[in-house]
Image (tube, rainbow, N blue to C red; front, side, top):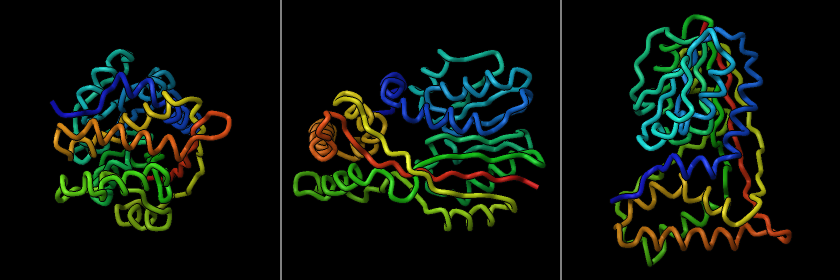
Amino acid sequence: MRSGFDGKKYETSSSHQKEWGEKVIEELGLKGSEHILDLGCGNGLITKALAERVPEGRVVGVDSSHSMLERACFHQLENMEFLLSDINDINFKEEFDIVFSNAAMHWIKDHNSVLHKIHASLKRGGILRMQFAGEGNCPTLIRILEESMDSSVFGEMVHDFEWPWYMPDAESYEEILSSAGFREYRVWMEDADRYFPDEQSFAGWIEQPSLVPFMNALPEDNSALFRDMVIEKAKEAALQSDGTYFEAFRRINVSAFKE
């Protein structure tokens, strides 16, 4: 059985993603009656935080992982619903006041197509607010992943492997927003460096969900070996003198309006 996204494991290793999402929610200034689409809702904790702030509205969470949505159902409120769907396949027409996404859109490659669909899903005057991995994100982990996939041990095992993430810079993303029909927008980069308090939290973050596409690309007999090697190398590179583990996070923030 191949590795997959694990909603329960993700929930125990994603406190930084939750912190980022809660920060963005506070900045929205919600009035309480908005209809919100949460793209890449994952385990549903941020979807729930949105729903709690719109008691007269509703929140629809979309995710492509069965395991994530199974976990999300533990957090479900009456004004929430979840859809099992790839973000690339959303098809709504002027249904939402806000389209929201936290720490998910770097998993999407074709942002031009998705942004057109997001634009279509928004009501006139609607808001798009996203935060995800941008250029320069997680340089230590990415270097180790690149070296490991190109190594003599694993390089011959993978053919036509497609890098799983899209991490743009602010300027190039503005061009995509404009081409999708957004006329008023702001895009900015944010440093969100993280000191993981211990080995367990650091390794847990790497395993879920970062390593999943790499492990799935390898023969099943070798995927655990790859996981263990990457985690050990990352721990060596990230360990600080006080026992914490450091990684640099670079986030791209998007705020846009539909006329």
